[in-house]
Length: 317
Image (tube, rainbow, N blue to C red; front, top):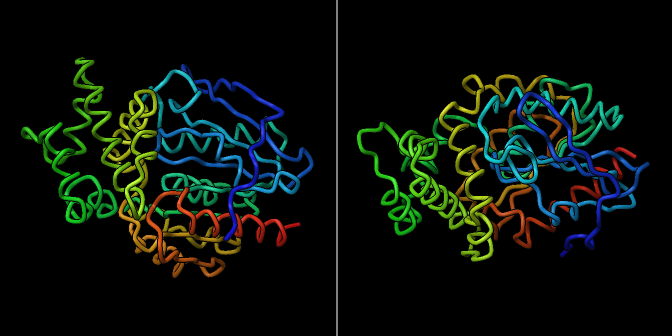
């Protein structure tokens, strides 16, 4: 079973000013002459980490990472101003132009798979290939499954009780709207408690077996605030996409090779997302990992993703 490549450091870093007040953190690692790949992180709002550089052979790839608006090392932290899917797609284009990339591979998991697919459907001529994990298609039941008591709560009733006790409905039509009211409110203590509860709920559901590391990472105050605020903002607005937008526009990327990796027991984004995408996308291959959930760090997921990057490099080079 394959593991991550050894740790590497970036040789190039940028702060890119986009729409005010946002500045994006960007880093480049690996081979300056290699196959360009853009790592598109999840959440939205989670940001990148050092391990995200390690899915790619640094001799084969020019590895580009960026923190999306309000996330990670981008500033201002957890800011919702002009924070939309369309704005993030424009940011990705600005990054491509800044770095002089003609075509690149997109590597995205969870929300990163959503954003990668929408970018590819917007700029298909700029995408050489797609490697996607933990597919999220942003259909109403995909949102309700995790956040509105339509599925994941039945698997994790104890964790769901903590989620629904911290922020109650109190007249709101859904927990997304209830949490959004607190996360954008003026009570700083309540806002931080809601952020930790939102992020802990996701962290507890993320792996086939409970990963305390994932829970602690996502509930770290810095990460929790951006993850909860931005994620809730996007879910409240249906990720700023039209109904079933990705599958309705799949013909725009039908010629682009894609590799899909999804855990059989993914309780954050169900495997039905990956199956629907694969069936609609003729040039995709789907790998369902039998002993994994949603986390990109589970051994079977790591193995499949590293094999996918090797295969994509071989196919495109």
